[in-house]
Length: 235
Image (cartoon, rainbow, N blue to C red; front, top):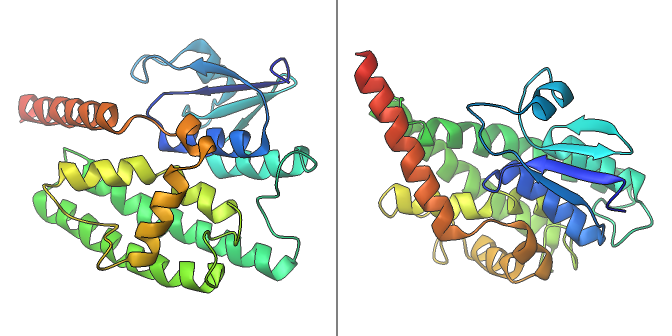
C-alpha cells in the first residue's frame, strides 16, 4: 500500500508519532516524507494543509488528511479489516475513549506547549507544569477505569487512547529532563501509568514509530535556546 499511503511529518513530531503508531499497529505500509524545515515549509505541506500549515499530513490515494487524531480515526475506518481495532465496538466505550483523548488534548497538550515555550514568563511555565501534573494524575485514574486490570487503555491491546498518549511519550520523558527532574510519570506517584509506559515503549510498533529520546532532548534544547535568543534580541 505504499503507493496509496504517504505520511508527511517531521522526525520529532509527537503528533506524527501518533499516526506512525496507528499505521504500524494496523500493519499498514506507507511512504514516509520528511518535512525538513518547519521555518521554511515545503510547498507540499502548504498545499496539503493550507489552514494550519502543520504536520502530520496523511495522503491516501492522493487526498490529504490533517490533524493527528482525525487521521487516526480515518485509518481506523478506512482500514477496518487491517490489524486490531483501535476503537471498541460498543458505542458507549467508543465515546469514553474519545472523551479521554479530548482530555489529553486540552489538559495535557495545551499546558505542555506553554511549559516548553522559551518565550513564556517563568510563572506561566510553572503553571503549565502544575496543569500537566494534575492531568497525569487524572489519567492514572482513567487508566484504572478503562483498563480494569489489563495492560492498556484499550484493554488487552493498544487502543485509541493509548495511541493519543503514546505518541507523546518520548516528549513527556524529555520534558522531565528539560525541567531538571520534574517527574510527570513516576513509579511512586503514578504506578499504573509508569508500567503502561514501559509496556507501550517495548512494543515493536512503538519502537518503529517513536523518535529517539536523546535526539529529542538535543532538538528541544536547541529550539528553546533559539527562542530565548530571539526574545533577547527583541527586547
